Length: 452
Ligand SMILES: Nc1ncnc2c1ncn2[C@@H]1O[C@H](COP(=O)(O)OP(=O)(O)OP(=O)(O)O)[C@@H](O)[C@H]1O
Image 1 (tube, helix red, strand yellow):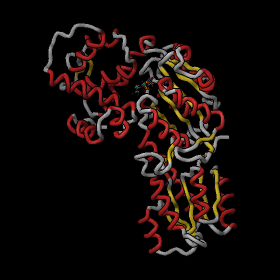
Image 2 (cartoon, rainbow, N blue to C red):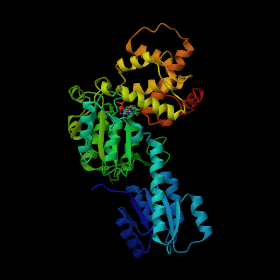
Image 3 (spheres, helix red, strand yellow):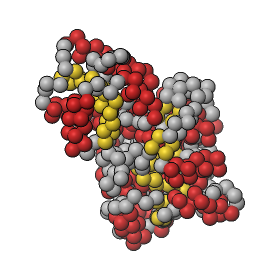
Image 4 (tube, protein in one colour):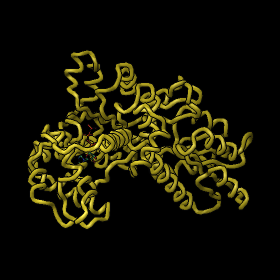
């Protein structure tokens, strides 16, 4: 069974715990119980609960102590709602100051508590989505308008596989939309109310990837200044998307295999087993059969992740969609930039329809973004920065020589944008992957006015 959102109730009164357990389970929550602050902290060490409902007065430490500890250790990964029999303005203010998301008085209508819980759920989703996910909303993709027989086939497969929880491997060249399809599968599945958590295995170093996936305990390595909840725990009940899985080291592959077999993880620096439940979608643009022959990819892991394989065709094999996609991206960017685009120059359109896009949809999207930005009279033309880049990629001669400074700027802009996209717009991770400091990357973002 896939778990839905989890709540930990902390209260020394067993009747209260049981009443709320029944009510919350009726609303589809998975409920854990603790009769004291000490017990609650022990449970949280082993298992991730995004929401904690805590009484104030209990034998031993009180609810404010628990709230304080949780905020110190887990920051925004866990939201706390303080529940009390004797509400006062002072204690409500105190709870909010320490960082509680809500405050509920036991004698009130439970519906008020449910609305606090829903608020906490939305908050956690938002935080996590902001931290790790910058994915396109469904309405922002060109999929259901497709006329390409190959893409229609892909969409048919998506319909079928989204009803099951089997592991899926998405294959296809870079930029074809593997993450877009993974997200669509998630949205259509019964886990859609929970998180879709994408991780790019290529963008981060091996040791960082493990801490990202499994989390770590405070002090488990230099720089681990607080406990960190890993992506497998965050994805609990939802979908985890391992992009570029072919780039993962053999060492990490063994660990992933173990998680798939046992459905349990251990945070780095701890030997406690934590149960996790998720649907795995992986993606690669490598030929994994070849990587297995070369000894770079484990065969047993390949069979585990590849229960179902969906191959996404390159853009040059979906020419039927090119015209529609060009219009779609023009509309998208002119709305986003609030530009009044009147049309596209004939030669430019012809060129875009004939070009073969080695970078697939990502490249088309970037080209359109660039020509929309650079258009000053509402007509889209390629005799700008856009055309220079296309010709370079197709191997055609670019006669115009720009200054070294300008060329370096153009390179840096593309390089930074690419690194940020691969790191889900997370500046810290992108800076690590680029081998520069956060501050240096930040300065570049300001210098080039790159809006994240
Ligand atoms: N059908 C589509 N409609 C709109 N945008 C799309 C579509 N497919 C891909 N894109 C856009 O193209 C870019 C690349 O897509 P995505 O990251 O899903 O590709 P990918 O195959 O996972 O790439 P990589 O192999 O490099 O990880 C993204 O900006 C995405 O929003």
